[in-house]
Image (cartoon, rainbow, N blue to C red; front, side, top):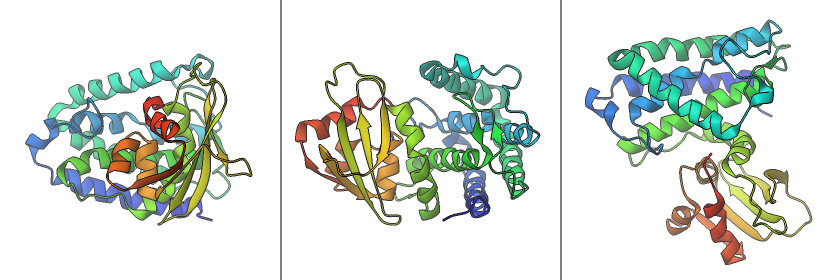
Length: 277
């Protein structure tokens, strides 16, 4: 089992690699589209700048999981409004910092690494504010790694078609897919009975799970004796790119990265029901 301390090492390595990449990125590239639909490279960095993990962790370690000033109460959380607020904050940060965006972002990123690095062994379960509901420090660490590495992919994959997520980051991202799933699919009254999609993930981290869709919600379950309507098979990177909405199931299938057995119509409908991770 990977410990939080080992996760911090992953965060530190990913942060250093991303900073080095951004420092070498030509100025004209910042206005180019990223792989995150509708966002330029500068917009993505603006989004990452706005994720003030350090402040939330610091408050949580002090026993305060309440919303910071200007943040919504958990009871008022709305997923669609949350997504729109994220987009608007990214644009605002990009406009506010302009040509100094990288200069502003690097200290913010370094601060988050430093705060996680200083978490004591008995503090990883302390709750911290998060808009959908408080989460322990260790979960926010995984979320920090997931946000950083997935958005690094959004940028780097557009300038290097051979870029791949690191094995360590894939291992962390696989543990956060349950949150991506809850955000990616919305209630669908057209689903008459639960649909069970099974994912068999091979290398670098083997795993198996079921994504179950109902007309009320979609969630992940451990594989059980119930038969799956569709069984997908892919590697870990493909799995997280699909579940985070960066690679469509149709494209992954066409590229030979994703195969399936079972109901063809249901397999094809999986991608159509996806609203974004």
